[in-house]
Length: 233
Image (cartoon, rainbow, N blue to C red; front, side, top):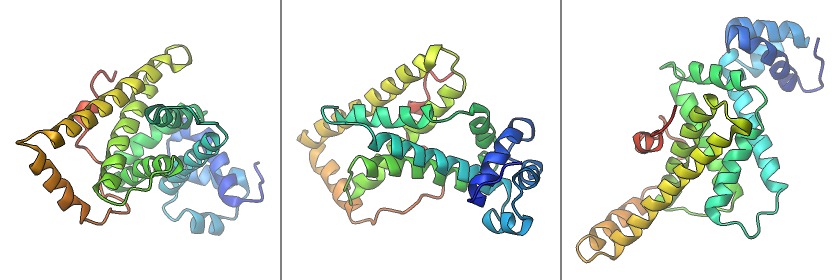
């Protein structure tokens, strides 16, 4: 029986051994309550949607571990695209239980949970940009996080099916996705300078800059998915 001072951590740790067999389910939640020794009333107060909230807590725990890992690194001298790649890699390397992620993806794919799944991915992207010092407030605030959400979600999907040594294939896949994004930014820069397209692009960006960046989208940004998911196993 797991007993920790923090009941939320105790419940989450007690739940993980059951996820492989029961998924993030009510059965998993009740087993975690029994194994952790946390009072059932406290457990329901902490996780009112039971296993759904447990799965989201597991995701946030991974984000926190990633932030700690990034802040412990000396990033001086790294190109910005390499900082992004490192952040995504550290996020995945900090996960000890692939099955918990796989089962979480299955849970969040349900229509009733899709907004929560999108919010979790967006939160990861937002945290990475914030840690790395992004201060944008215009349309770039949204586009950066939308793009990174696509990169991150595609990389997670690839990672789940990757059995290469030390996930080397995943890191190569990640580099290709980031290179794709850099190509898009290069094309956008060229369009801004083009005599015919420049005013149009600049006008669109000016219009978007008047829109207040949303705190969280209601669905996972999908505009990059077909592009980002190519060569996913």
